[in-house]
Image (cartoon, rainbow over all chains, first blue to last red; front, side):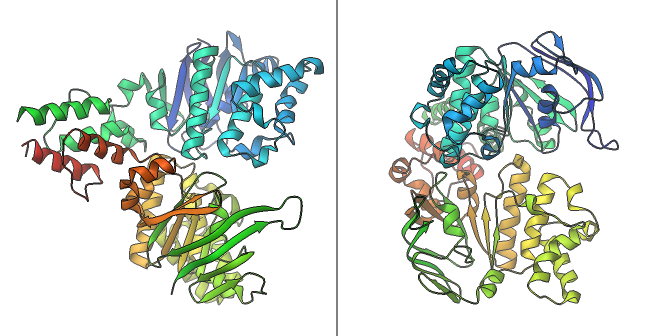
Length: 274
Length: 285
């Protein structure tokens, strides 16, 4: 387990705790999604993992090391985070400066910086934009620059806190594809806090948060079929499950509910049998 | 009464090194009393376009007709206050603009500024809160005690309290959870059907366009590249491909079914209708 949380408690407001006795573990190199309605505590977990908020009780271990006042800086070196609003995380006046900012903070030798910047700008497909002003980029491009800045720190864990929720469909796809390739090639552990149910379908493991606690956890193919529970938690189900439901109301049952093309094939077979 | 753009161009910071043409020769007619979706990639000019509707921006060329007011380029446009009372603009993440101690004061801020008599303000506040689905028990609460979705409702109520005929919303469901987003869209449909508000929504969500909008306007690089009925738009595969727009999954499902020899009626754009028609076809009733 690269992340191990035990009996974690946190409250912004004492009378209404945000995280209640939460325990969970995340496997090294896995792609995890965290879903939950607004206010369920999803983003608070990310901030607690980074030590941006101070827990009230419980333990957080990252890669075998307990998060404390003494270890917080070591642990932050292992975790990269990209936030929701791409406009709130730019420092530099050019893409190059922005990626350099993190490197400077980590006292990377200026002689090596150029090569590192080229490497990571290249990985996120932004090499042609190094001299551009970050504010003039599209949302998807901005998030890719933010990810490049984070990757240059070689994190073991990449956290995305609703990183695609403000992007247009194209930008969303750019970022999702990039994160997937980082997961596949770098074996970076991914923790994506998201409302995008299709992204959840493609992840290894999903955590469902409700009122500061884990309501469900497991493989997406198991969790996403628990329709009523997801609905009760104000969450969405994949499109294919909605299709299956609509056909069920007409008395047509599919052998599985997560592969839309397979369902269309089943209908085709029904039709040709007539 | 109409909303029309006639040969409108808009240039930011003209005659400076930062000059940037955001709108190019826009000709556009928006139906009053309908829900119109404005779509297009980031930076395509959607927000610039809608900011003309209540004269936050004045065209640098051409003219914009909004109800009984016309905004001209190169002219000193006066009496904009009346227009701003008729067109309410809700920016992205409007909850970030809440500032008062109580919801009553926050929602009442707009009408107060427009000189509505104090005794009338309270009733307007109550009515607007009701429109967004919040009752009188919310009046004395601090807007900051609410959840994200509720805060956004309060912010929208603040605009409704001005009693606009036209409500313009820039990505009103961004950042809301799926059910919060659905409730928000249902709210706009209700404002349109029950209170006859003309609604313009800037959105990236094609499912919302298909499910809720009557008309759609597509922008690309500062130009209007398509305008028409939302359903007809999603049937035009060639146009969608050319504009690089990914159709909502229900449209893809329709195509797959029809590609497999099924027949679907023109109106079958929701899952229940599609399932019913297919069930009939395979003799499963």
